[in-house]
Structure formats: C-alpha cells, structure tokens
Image (cartoon, rainbow, N blue to C red; front, side):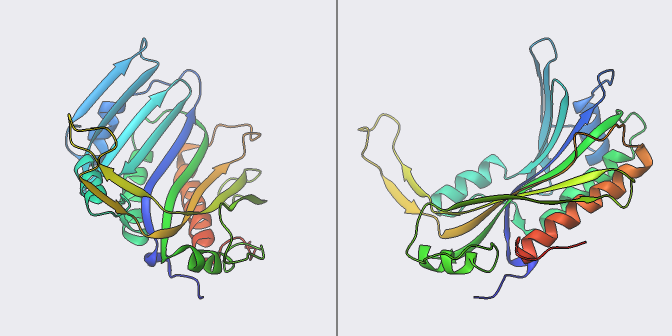
Length: 258
C-alpha cells in the first residue's frame, strides 16, 4: 500500500514545549491574549504559581498554554464539545487534517516568538499525535511496512515501534543538535455510553473508532546545547522541527534526510 499524502493524516493534537531559563517570568493569560487577540475562557493558578494555565477556543479548537515549574507548553487539541461528538459518532477526537492543523498551530507559535516579553529559552520541542485510518488491523500492519523498517506479519498485534533518528544539526543555530523521535503503533478504540444512575455495565450506546496507524512525534533540540537560543533564531529552529516532523509523516523512518 502507498504512503499517504501529508494532508490525508488526521491530527489528534499538537504541542510546543519550551524550557525557559530559571529567572524567566511567565504570563500565560497575557500571552494567550496577545497571540489570539481575545481573552482566554479560563485562567488558573495553583501550588504557589508552580502551575498556571490559560485556555480558550481558537479557530474551532482548544488552545491551552500551561506553565509547570521549568517548562511551558502550548497545546492545540479538540474542544470538549468536539470530543463528546466524536465519541457519540465513534470517531477519534481530532483537530483536523494535517496541513490545516499545522498551519493554525504555527501561526500561534510564530506570533508568540515575536512577543516583547518572551522568556529566555534554552530548549524547544515540537510534538504531535497523528492518525492514519486504515480500516482494519490487517491493512494497518500491511501499511506500516511502508513507514518502518520491520517485516511484519499482517496477522500480528500489539506492535510498538519507537526510534530516535540519527541526530542532525540545526541550520539556524550552529552546534544545536536535533532529536527526531517517533513512535508507531496500531490503535482501535471501543466507546460505551452509560446513563447516569443506570446499572453499571449496561451501556445505552456502543461504537468503535476505525483502526488506525497512530504516530506520536517529539522533535526537539538536544539538552546538551549550552543555550540560550537567541530570540531571532527561535522561529528558524521551530520551522526545522516542523519540517523534520513533516518528513517523518510523509516518509516514515525508512529513509534518511539531510
């Protein structure tokens, strides 16, 4: 079976993670408003400000900015209502086709990198979870052979393949190495709806999502780099991380790229 085009993949979620320097001040609510132009729907702080977050709807998806100790995460995920609808219709919750979801998320990241009060950043990571619906388990294992260098019996089950491709160096920042981690598996979910107050184990609805190849990506800068990454280089580094992710989605881990 042929590999899918990039836009045929469905995206469950996307993530940007940055590791600021210890003295940086974080402002989730203010940054969320700066990049979207509207106030977040929800802001929360707990644990003496060790955890703080802001979230709301952006282009029909949920956008979350979360700060925990020494890291900041931007997440683009399905809204709560979209998740509920997906469960009812026996579909995997998703934020759309790959090209549109990547473009929407990148617009947020690029605006944030231009913020005047951006913290000093030592490390950057781009992550995502994508699905390739293939109909049934046998087709899934046949299709996987196009993406990973493993001979797979199509009657197999429970395969999990994870690899960090050989390190490459950033073109934006000399000496900055990039990790290209990907995890490949086949998923199939069963959904049950049980009435509140009903008899436990007696569902009123039952469905299942299509079998799919699940790809989890974590493309990140090496922790051994003696940062920080200069502000005017962040967008270039981010684009390299996204491009590495796109290459893996398109080609799997069989081919190598410069």
